[in-house]
Image (tube, rainbow, N blue to C red; front, side):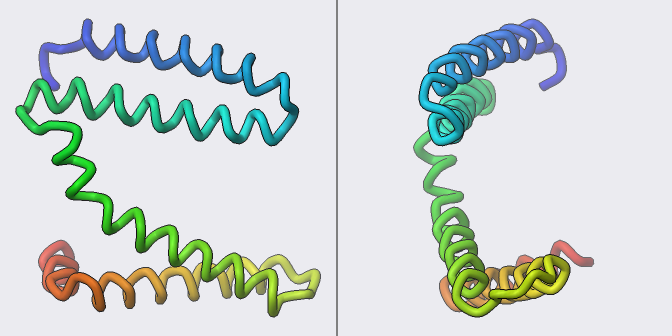
Length: 130
């Protein structure tokens, strides 16, 4: 937001400080602890960004979450589908084939699930393209 560089700086310092704290805390539990610490840090950072930007444009955190929750669910389902197919059917060493098939399957399942759950998705996609 124009004219809010001091707010951006303070938020950036806060988030970097939290990152250091979470990395130190997660380091105690090896790689799994670092993964969990990164997940928590990302969620805290999301809340901080949404809270402060929401105050500036009068768009509450809960409203922002309501607007994106379906996309998060669909992305998670597509990701789990790609993972399941990869683990179940691709027992080969060709990483290129696995990557390519994952991208194609993930993209197709994401678009298909969006089209099924949100019929206006195709209209919005066409509107973005033009």
